[in-house]
Length: 309
Image 1 (cartoon, rainbow, N blue to C red):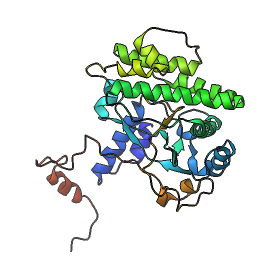
Image 2: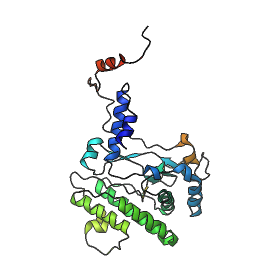
Image 3: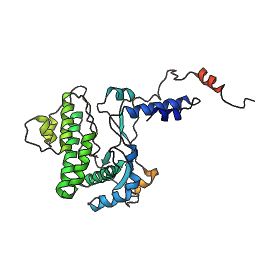
């Protein structure tokens, strides 16, 4: 966002708002993940088409397709981005067999048409995804399980419907091009390289390496992995779906909702929000930290045209 845009929003009588705008502009400039607001597509505009597409591929008619809120990701980031925020808010596609939660808007690619097709690809992945087992406690094991499951879901989709391959290839190529290049510790670097190879469509060869075996689904190899000290999870891949555990037994969460295509996305009041409190939250501070001197606020008030009678 340009400096002129910031100046146009400068309000000297509202310093907190002005500082907030400046901070938002800074975060946008140092973002590791590109965004293209001019090419953004809203889920509400895709809801009907997605519902028909999802169920046409064999998706459960009782599944509610909704907008999901941001979740916090603690993947490794550039220094300036870490300075700006303790964690990164990301919108991920998530499916638990009862609800398909998709980003409220998609602007990860520079073309609007590609962002629209990303919605379709994510819906297709949900149809062919395999139910997730309980996540391992070890963070490296948990990440390896997520990656192996995501790759397997995509293979299942193409094995059943080969006609999805052009869609998959386009989304993967764009997602690969958007991956930032960062200096990573050895284990994290290997996971990132594996992700990039998957997005490039690389053929897998037999390997005796423990991590390689775990990434192709060897459960025993995965159980032998131990996350190194300081390990951080991989950067989320917008082209993949997070498959969650099924909801608890009982009435389905979508049973009382209109199961028509995209009904959840059209109703803002029913939107699924996965809000998490950030570690940087200052609500519980007990000190007397004041970011703006009170006397300066009074000084600014002297310049306002107010009725002081």
